Image 1 (cartoon, rainbow, N blue to C red):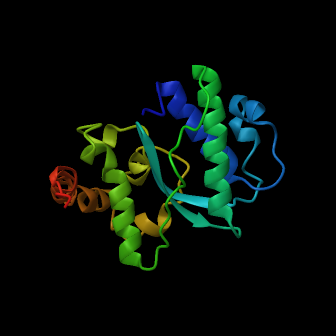
Image 2: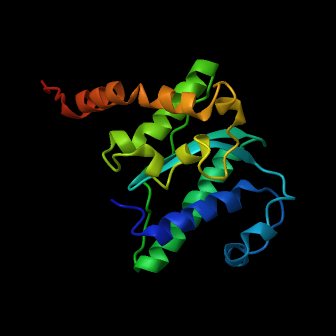
Length: 192
C-alpha cells in the first residue's frame, strides 16, 4: 500500500525525520514545519542519519545511534507521527506500517559501504526511477554533491576520491542487484 500519496507527503515525512532526530525539548511539530531552521541546530541528536531512501510503500534508513535505544525511539516516533498525519489527512484509521521495523547492526566497513549502496539503489531496483540522481526522496543526490541535506555522509563519502567514484561504486552494482531482485521475486518454491 502506498504510504506517500504526493510530494507533500514525502516532504512531511522528511520533516518528521529531521524533527524526531533531535533530543530534548523542542517546539511543537506544527511550529517546526513553518520554521525548521529554528529547531535543531542546538539540540543533541538521538541518531545520525547516514543515508535514507523513501520508497512508495516503505523506507530505508542507515542510522548511527547516539543515545541508548535512540534508533528504536526514533523509528517509533517517526512511524507513529507520520501514521497520525496520514490517517487524519486521508480519513482512515489503523496502522500504516506492517509489523515491527527490522534492523541490522553494522559490524564492518564493507557492510557499511554495501548498505549505503543497497539503500541508494532501491528506487532503481524497484523500477521507481530510471535515473538515480534525479530521485528526490533519497540521500543519493546528497552523496553526489547535488544537494545539501540531512545526512552525515562523510564517513562513507570520505572513502572515495570523489563523489563520481561513489557514483561509479553504486552504478557498477546496479545490474547485479536487479538480477538478484528478479531471482528473489520470480523463483517459486513448491510446498510439499
